[in-house]
Length: 140
Length: 140
Image 1: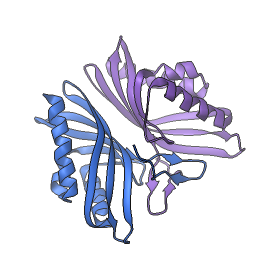
Image 2 (image 1 turned 30 degrees about the vertical axis):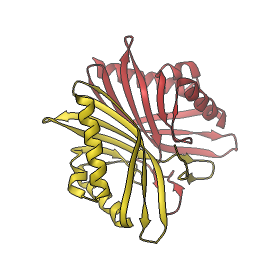
Image 3 (image 1 turned 180 degrees about the horizontal axis):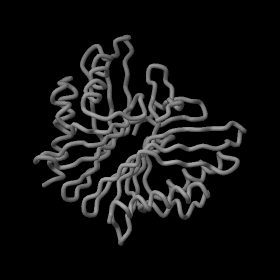
Image 4 (image 1 turned 90 degrees about the horizontal axis):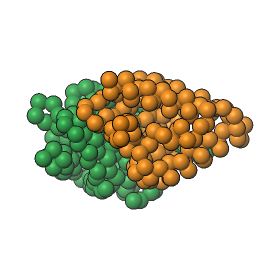
């Protein structure tokens, strides 16, 4: 069943992320992924850019990284699917500061060569535009 | 053709937005939409919450609002689709400040009762986490 396959993909990805296993992390993404990522730029395309973004994030944490996926919703029809969830990233930054952050994650999948691949993702925290702030203290 | 229908939906929505026509703006959304919106909270569900969010945004601008959709990508298969683009919102805020903002927009559609409806959307600007800032000065 397609939804179960996608949920398994997300679960596997989460484990790979916690292990900072960049190759397994990257196995979720299509080569031509278009990403609206948590930090600038506005958007980037291609798995090489995605790999660089993950390397930088992994390097920002001094030890292991925690990753939890909550409220995962998956909608599938034929060879297309989309998923969204609230994800918590936690760990100790290289500065010594302990960071816990809830972010919003949307992923659009296509079934390519017998595998569900993310062709577009969007990751963010809300913005407080009146004060120019990223809102990083919200919890589900 | 489904992709053309969705592009027309987005074009119609853009015109409705510029006219601050809340009912036509709302006609894009499924009643049970789950939204990861530009400003807090992390997420909300239901078209009543979406309507409230748009009313608040419209009220924040003293005059007409500009809205441009760029780099619109639409992927369709059967009764599912997803779209993403970079959208520019511009206008004069009630404070008198002129605001121009590029945001990232992802929308997931289902074909419900012969109409393409947005069941999930995600709107954001990137975050500068090191400085706690919303990054609002980027251009495509």
